Length: 492
Ligand code: NAI
Ligand code: MG
Image (tube, rainbow, N blue to C red):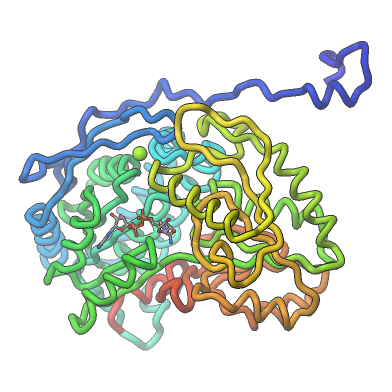
């Protein structure tokens, strides 16, 4: 630092002038096909109707590749391949042998981690920091973790006789494309099920790359089938009579459709839907850490996180301080090129999602809430949104009760523990929450009373394959991850 410090002028000027130089991750090593087919029965095959759609880079609006649009016929082929592989090979194979394949997939993913991180960022807009440090390593860890369970199912369910369900139909969203694929595929394989997985229409590329790894790993044909398409393709999976289990992550609206479609069919269902998490800051909290936790909870990953801390509750005595520090920190956030390692907030995943977020910002403004946005520059091309706060909101504001899925934080204050518990619980969702306080007793007191599947204490957005994840109420049901994640894929 000393060498580049300006000789004249006060030090403060130097810091306010100071900018990070661009540090973009290279994409020279990335090889994308012009066109991707469907991965069915161990081979890449053309869709029967020959239809394709494009996936773009939301940061540049450039087309990256074309992917196949699977229709009912393709879904039928994939489900039949999975059924066949289940009956003839996979459910008969020993857990030890199954585990070897899953370990192999985990190791191959680790070997190609950099490539996967860059493609994830290009296709979905999330920052390279996140795809490199969170998505890809966690995805590999999920395969490692569940590989370990494959030959130990009798220990997971002592004195029971865990049996696979058959074919699992899995439908995933665009916010953690590779990680969601890993969350769904790894426990299904470990428990002896076969898979038909559909990725989201804006982010199909890393699951197709995963299909390449699966093919290379020598996993028997048909055990995992990966297809692409939109809602109709997803519905065809859900409604297929040979599908025994449906695992879905996405909107509450589609979750409801799936629940109706599967009612009375005997299909086992897990749904991981939206959220509107409360992040609760008490007066005795470590304030600087809490502010960083708030930032991490809602602004990193563009707020595209179902468990994002999108409602902030600050205890009155520290409200002014927390809000001032929060605004100061927001000013320093860098919005822009997701491939740049300095970027804090990347691109919004799609034009539609940007419109949804903008719609909610208008609703917040016209509803009379105080609006604050950082003054950072944003790129002219691509889909971007500045970090945004709404202050002086109340429980009746739509921005407080509805999922926005963007970098928008609604701030409320509270006086007592009873008050904040009631406010935090008073929404249709119940996925996650955060609590910041110096007192362990307060943590135990409040975490038991919050109706949320996951509660973080003095931290936020921490994930681990060994710990179960899932919600209450309209956030869905069933758990993924950990021992609990196995239960969704077995008959006892
Ligand atoms: P979505 O629920 O429509 O999409 C999720 C997945 O479901 C995609 O793969 C999609 O192709 C598929 N799908 C759509 N309709 C289907 C149907 N009828 N049957 C079976 N599968 C179907 O979510 P969308 O439209 O991308 O986002 C809308 C909102 O949902 C977001 O603004 C956000 O609030 C929420 N969301 C929540 C997520 C979470 O992690 N819980 C992830 C993505 C979105
Ligand atoms: Mg894309």
